[in-house]
Image (tube, rainbow, N blue to C red; front, side, top):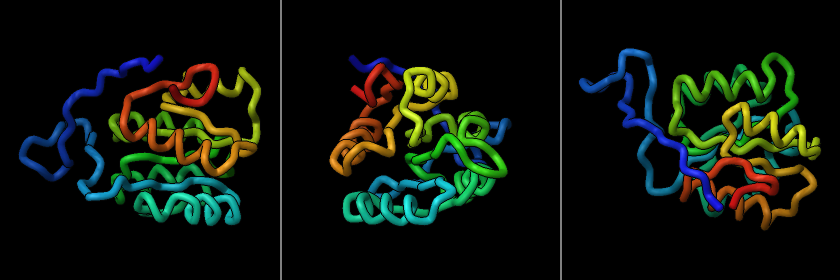
Length: 159
């Protein structure tokens, strides 16, 4: 079952219809744009390789703070966000992303797969959760579902 999340209309910061609170919408592109935020190079590069033929990988960041800054600059449609990172955790980064770009989808990716971790990810504003133990097809499926819906994290990934 998919739960709907009401997202209000957004404007780009420099447009005449700009919201005064600095919110913006993702950049327009023929392919969905994905930002990968994880503190491990191998994970970022691997995810980029897995998803890059289907979607545009618009950027990568090694910590939550850089991820937030890149969301502001690149306006991705979706952010793949690790929970545990240096400088700024994925949870804190998600809160900042939600404030400035509420229509940007967030998929949490973590090696921690306990139900409590999934609940924390959901409460932090994630649209979905993928365990790093998942296979490539599961990751692709979750990304596809999140990009084409407004699902939240149920007990298992995104439905």
